[in-house]
Length: 216
Image (cartoon, rainbow, N blue to C red; front, top):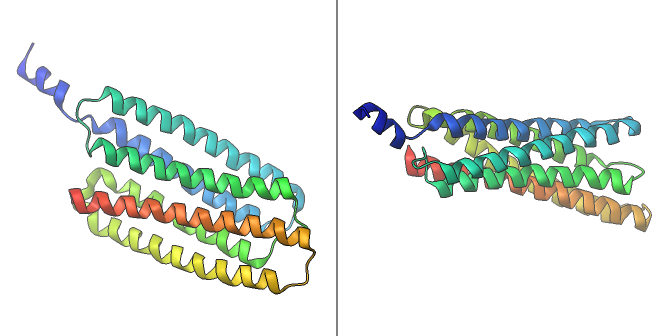
């Protein structure tokens, strides 16, 4: 066997991981866009259809996650530490799962109305997942793109702080309103899940920050 052939066996096959991570990030972004559409929809009949689309993205993400973990087990050398690839995959998957749960609760509970805070939170999710998509797309050339990635990370953190403020005001407004108790319980659950989704997105930002610090 030629030396080049031997070395190629041990060389990091980056082509395996970056497209898979980018596909997962794209699923995050698509889910975020669908969430914004769902929570801003004025047509109740569209909500189940949008939830099905979010659920389809979540299922697609689970398949990609499985492929990434399989490749981690089968690849000798990886572009980043296995733990970092695994963590980034996990936190992106968690973000999609949380958005799916929030959308499912809307379909399950069928609230009479969705307050403005839910629309604002879903809009923040859309922006945050778009930042994730952009940042992950820069990872394949990390040393060159580290400043751009850091900018995306800072924006993800800023959006999480904005989500906290919206959540607090939305919760306060909810308890100060005169809606029926059953509706209050439904909306509290939905708002909480949206806020959790924002936290999951921020976890992706934290993971990206760790990768940038270690490898740029």
